[in-house]
Structures are given as C-alpha cells and as structure tokens.
Image (cartoon, rainbow, N blue to C red):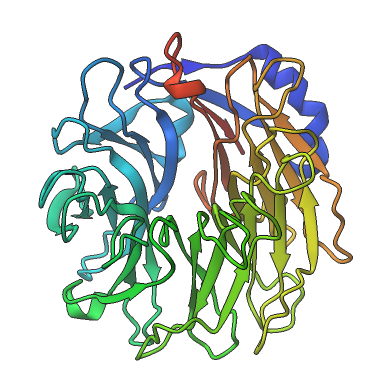
Length: 436
C-alpha cells in the first residue's frame, strides 16, 4: 500500500499554529477504496520486528463499499510510515467481520524479543452471527504469525468492540488483555473479559454491568495506577447507560487491578444529563499533578447545553471525587467534542498533552473536523493551546486520534488524526494525517 499526499496547504497552515508545540505536519496516507474506513483505528503494535522502532497498525475495517468486505490491517514500520509503504497486511477474509475494529500491543508475550499484538473483529461470525473475535499475533523478523483466536460466546455479542493490553493488571508481572463485548452478558448489557497473560489468555475473568443495551465495554482502557497501590487499574465505558432517570447519560466504571479483580467497581461516574454519551472514550494521562496517582480523562461527545461535547479530567487517588478537576468544552452544537481522546508528551517536557477529537466541528467547511490540543501543566486551563483542522467538508478529522510514543525514534512520538468522512466517504477516500 502506498498512497501519500503531502499537502502544501496543510503544511503551511499548521507550521505557525503548532510551532510552539514542536509539532509539524509530515504527510497524509489515504485508503485504497471508498468506504474502507482506512485509519479509523490506529495503534502501536510494539516493536514487532525488533528494529528498535514500534510498528504502526492501521485498520481498514470495512474493506470498501458495496457487498460486505473483509477488514484489513496494514502494518507500517514506524521509522518510515511517512512514506506510506506498509510492509505487511493482515485479514481473516471473512466478509463483514470488521477485522481491525480495535487493536493493541501486548508486549513480548512469548519472550522471544519480538513484541506481539492483538486485532479484534467485532462482527466475526466465528461462533454465531456478529459474535466477534480477537486474534493474537506473534511478532518476528518477517510477517507476524497468528497464535491464538478468542471468540465471543454467542451471536450478536460484538466481542472485540474494544481491547486493551500490553500492561500487567493482575500483579503477576505478565502483560494481560482486556476485551469488551458491548452486547455480551446475560441481559445484553455488555461484558468485559480479562485474560491473564500468565495463563496464556485462557479462562478469563468476566465482568457484567448495567441494564440491557447500556453498551458496557464499548471502551476498555488501562489507565495506570489510579489508586496508588502499585498495580494498573481499568476504566470501562458504557455510554448508553441510563441513571437516575437520565436516559443514555453514560457511565464509566473504575476497577482496581490485582491478583483477584473484583466485579465491584471502586468508583463509578455518570453523565450529567440525558444523552451525554459520557464514557464514549477514555484516556489515561499519567500522573499530571505529581501526587503519586495516575489521572484520566473521559469524553462525553453529546454533553453541554448545545450538545457540543465535553471532556472531564479526574485526578486519581485513594478515593476519587465525583467532581472533575477540570472540564473542557466544545465550541458549537454538533461538534462531537470528546468523541475520541489520546494523550502523550508531544513537546517532550515530561508532561503529557491531551488531544480531543471533534469530528463534527465546522472550520468553514461543513463537518471538516478539528483536533484540540490542551496543555496539562499546572495550573490547568480549559482553553486549548493548539488545534488541527480537517482539510475539506465532511472529512470528520478527529474521529480517531492516537499519539504513539517513539514512532520516529526515542523521544520522537507521532500524532495520528483520522479523517474517514461521513459513512466512510462514499464519494471519496479516507485519510490519515500524520504529525511529529
């Protein structure tokens, strides 16, 4: 795959806007087919081929328009991704499986010095229509090899809606894997499966919460050590939750990591009003206030008086107040601010920035989209320091945002902004903008 656009307009526009952040536009990679949703999910795969750089996984989960197409995941070498040349591609060749619906690095699970990774296909029919599946691949000098397949329990589970891994949440020193199935569970409320790396990803812990259709597990995220006990903790989003009469206000459940993971969350947060979609996305921030507890942010892309969207930042601690430390807000109705979140140390000052996608934002072009970048230095400020706009109408830039540390070498991270367009750009091609 090699389709690269280097837009002089984009480059000139953002040099001045991002100069103070030490972030510059590199290139744009475009999909192969209209409707393939290329770039809607981007993840580090870890150092899959042991060349000293993390490989970049980019999915085209819908394959293309027309009859149902199998999803495809393209693997790019981090150091050369700006050239747009993938060195491998993966697919299960199952029509409509949405292979690449979620992806994550797993670390080196088999101790061979090559990092391994997981790819979800949440509409795979492996154990029933749309039951879902997750595939575990082993890294190596050549193309990755499939090691294991995990499947949903029944039809319509959507097992693999989201996944997270590469960190130890059970305290045994081995990286684990978390899988969300947003229609799993006994009452279709959603379920989350925690697979232990020490047990070869067999016999998972299963957690179920909420009422039918609450989409528990739509987002799963390892947010770091929020409680300060030395073990990573988990945030689980259920953005269609109804609470205290607030229909679809959304919720985020926090679970403590440990040898025995309780099915009872140590903290739960809810959206403030109906249809907030609180918990649509979650991001770990590291310890931004240097108190020994990891902090995190929650997106609610339909919150606010005008439904412009909100992002709530919470400080970790032995107990976490319901009131956030700060609230970031979208600009106008329909911005969908907070639809996607990521964080990373863009300017290399040892403190991360928060990047919030607003794919519905109008920049003079209808729904061209914008990514807002916030400094998290003290004191916190709700005004964005920088932003990046989409290029054209209906780009929906910021529908997915991902910062990958070390993509261009040690201390040289990359920011990826997806612009898949409305319904996969039926009249165009999805785009992935790259900044470094």
